Length: 342
Image (cartoon, rainbow, N blue to C red; front, side):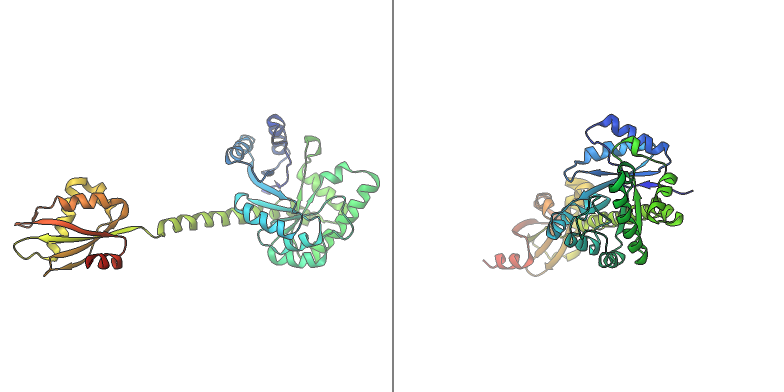
C-alpha cells in the first residue's frame, strides 16, 4: 500500500482548532504523514502537542523548519544551530549564492524557490549537479498553482516546467507538497498527481514525489538522528571518570600480604555501606609496598568520603591488629608521588 506524505502543511500554529481541522482533513484525503513547518524557537512541549494532534488523526507527525537565509553565511549559521532539532530542513533559495550553498550542503533536505522569482533565480544545472551529490530534493508547493490565475499562473507553470526538466536530467528527486494554509487548498494525492502534468511530471514520477521521495527523506533523517543520539549516549558513558588516589600507611607489628590489604579495605566498605555503596566506590588497589607497609588505592571522586571512612574503620587484617592511616589524597598518581615526599 502506497504511503502518501505531505511535507508542507502550513497550519496556523496559534489557532489550535484550525490546526486540528487541517490535520484531520489531510487524514481524510488519504495522507499517512504530514510535515508541519515550525519556528526555529519552537519549544519541545509545542512540538509534542502537534505530535499528539496528528496522532489523534492517525497521522505521523514530521517536524520541519523553513529557512530563508539572506546569504550563504546566514544559511550555514542556521544549519549549525537547527539541523539536529528538526527532522526536515527546507531552504528558500532567494539568490544564486544561497541556492548553490544549499544544493551542496548535505544538511539540507529540500530546495524551494519563490513563486515571484527574480531574474536569474531558478533551479539551474549547476545547482542540480550539486544537489544530485548531496541528496537534496527539489520541492514544489501546489498551493500557488491552485491560487494564482492568468499571467502569474502561466509564468509559474513555465518556471516549474523548466525546474522539473533540469531535475530529471540530473536525477534530482522531486517532492510534491501542498503548501496549504487552508483546508480549501488541500487535495487528494491523486488530484495533485494530475496537476503535475501541467509542468510535465509524468504519473510515475508524480507518485514517487508524493510518497517514496518524501518518505525516504524522513526515514533517512530519523535513522541519522537515532545514530547521533546513540553516539551521544555512548560518549557520555565513556567520558573520563574523575578519580582520587589515596596513599595509606598500615601500622602493624607483623607482615601484611597484598591480598589481605585488598580484602580488608573491600570488606570495610561492604560492612559500612553495603553492596550499593561498594558499587559506587570504583575501588582498585594500584600499588602495595610490603616493606614500607604503604598502599595506593584508587576510587571514584564521588565515593572519596565513603572510602576514607571505610579505611579509617579498619582495625584488623586477618588476625593482626592494625591501624590504617590516610597519608595523602590526590587526583593523579604523579601528584600523589610529589606530595609523598613533601
